[in-house]
Amino acid sequence: SAGKKVLELRVECSYATGTRADGVMGGEHALNEDLIKTLHYFLYQRGKTSENALFAGSYTMEDDTQDEAVIRVPLDDDELNGMLFPRPVNECDVYIIANLPDDVEIPSNTSVDNLRALVIETDFKGSDTLSSFVMDGMGIVQIVNRNKVLAASGEIPMKRLAAKFSVRISIVDSFTDTDGAVWKPSAPALSVSMLNAASRTTVEAVSGDKLFKYDSRGRTGERTETVDAVARTFQLYHPFYSYPRSWEFQSDGALSFLIVLPWECTLPNGDKKFQN
Image (tube, rainbow, N blue to C red):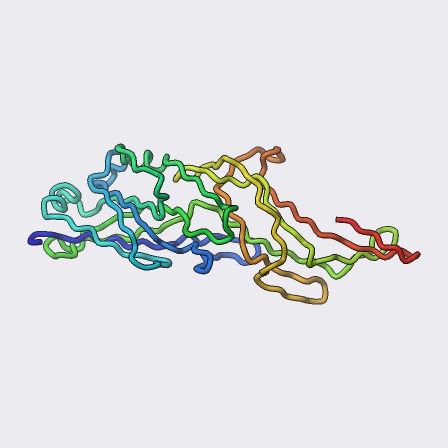
């Protein structure tokens, strides 16, 4: 319609994380870690995110959108120049939540702190591949030209709430104990589970609760395998997920992994001995 302006928001998944093994790594498309299905946006005058958003809305992506998405918010001239960017201000703040579950209601108080207090619960162990992950991000939108249709734009980096744990294990072909006995692993029988993962958190994701134990996972569908002169190394295909945790060192509630690997030893009399 006449007089309408457009505020363009470019949302980018930029939650690359560091690992001890591989350095920086991002999300994986096959596991829907970059998938953007829905976006809730909240626009504020610059520096006033403690107040209610001046404008808010939501978008549902028509197709599966990976890595980034662009949405265009229509505003009339008064909304743009009179409310969001009152002269001489040329910037505003924007807060976005991606993939918010349908059962989470937007509160009447839409300050950023209040939005970040929304409770998110996810059944991580219910499926090896989740349909999507909740993400959030803050950004700044800048005036491009108050007199043109594309009046303002901004980029918003998004961060996934859930932490990801990829398991890579190296197993030696054998080892000799202090009695001289040679032990060999039964690598196909190896299993891994994660204890005290958190399935509930707030959007701020400071510390999760509602702890659970992942079912043990074996080598079925492992990602890769490499063999050298010392050991055989492989990575489980499906990672584990948990919302951020906070606990005292060596406490009972600490997040941890349980790795079970059977070992076999042939004794001098020909009998076999087994131990995990």
